[in-house]
Amino acid sequence: MNHSYRWVIVAAGALMTCVALGAMFSLAIFLEPMSLDTGWSRAGISSAMTLNFLVMGVGGFAWGSIYDRLGARPVVLAGAVLLGLALVVASRANSLLIFQLSYGVIVGLAASAFFAPMIALTTAWFDTNRSLAVSLVSAGMGVAPMTISPFARWLISAYDWRTAMFDIGVMAWVLLLPAVLLVRQPPAALAAADGAPAPVTDDPGMSVGQALRSPQFLVLGMTFFACCAAHSGPIFHMVSYAMACGVAPMAAVSIYSVEGLAGLGGRLLYGVLGDRLGVKPVLITGLAIQAAVIAAYLAVGRIEQFYVLAVIFGATYGGVMPLYAVLAREYFGPRIIGTVFGAATMLSSLGMSFGPLAGGMIYDAYASYSWLFIGSALVGLGAAGIAIAFPPQPNRQRLQMA
Image 1 (cartoon, rainbow, N blue to C red):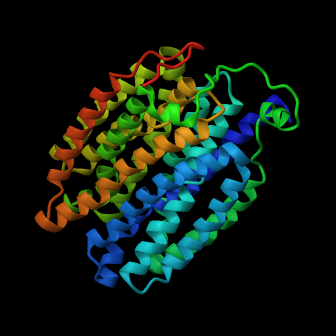
Image 2: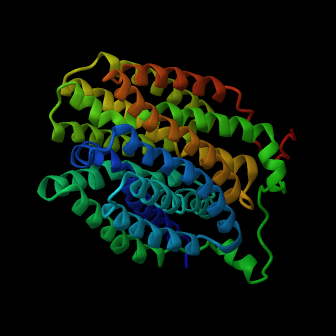
Image 3: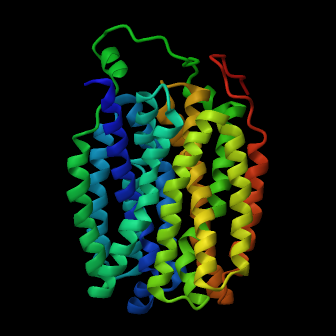
């Protein structure tokens, strides 16, 4: 392997995050047709997404620990097998409970096998342009609304929601299993495994317990949690909200796709800015913009207005997400990055779990999403405030202990 292989890792990671997270978030497209076909409540169906995030949080921490011990390939192989299986089983569910367990638990466990491990692997491959590389891997999440979501909508329109979900499960196997073969550990890790001396790194030598108790991790985890709690509800319920405002179903799905396209551009933009200006100021600015745009959705009603806000919203929430991994790598070094970032991802997943269920409950109670957007905007402002407390990024210095 030569140095250029690191871009193959980026491409494989982007594909995996696109398929895995795209399949998981496509539940927003299935929400209305499932509710009409089965009679299940929106809150009940949305709770599967809440389970996704809860299980994804625990799974991210567990998969991250396995990554630190075994490398990335066994982790992503297990995730690929589980993801297709979960979608196939969920497509045949005859009760809400079976659907919640298959889609909520197994899909969440499978999806968590890709994000944190592939992000951690990418940070290990890159010493320069790290923010950009991590942003490109996470860009798969931005591509997903432009690919998986419209594909799901087309399948639902052409057939029914069960056929659509089954086909997406098979597609996950077809795309992910070959991509697993491309996953490799970086040369430095391979050399260490063969007994060769490892190069000098900026790893501060902390244990996992010390890292998770440090003030740096506490601020990182709390910011990640609040950021995701702020945008998860608006993202998941955006299609339903637009339809409630009078937007046609396919046009409403296109808003979701525009957010994804903007998120792709935002990841590239914020990645470059993070490398040039520093991660902390770019993150704080992005979080503040995110909160303002969420509040602005309360004033829109026409498709053109939705598109404008979708561009800004998608760019900001998409752009800030990869920056947490870069901060984790710079604060804690490469040795325990899988476990530490997995723990941070667990907190972010807990934050993500609130929005879908809260939005469903709010709509069921008030037949309106207004309070969802008001609450999400306030939480987003809180995330920006917490991020201000980030300590200066270390320059090969030992971290301050809690």
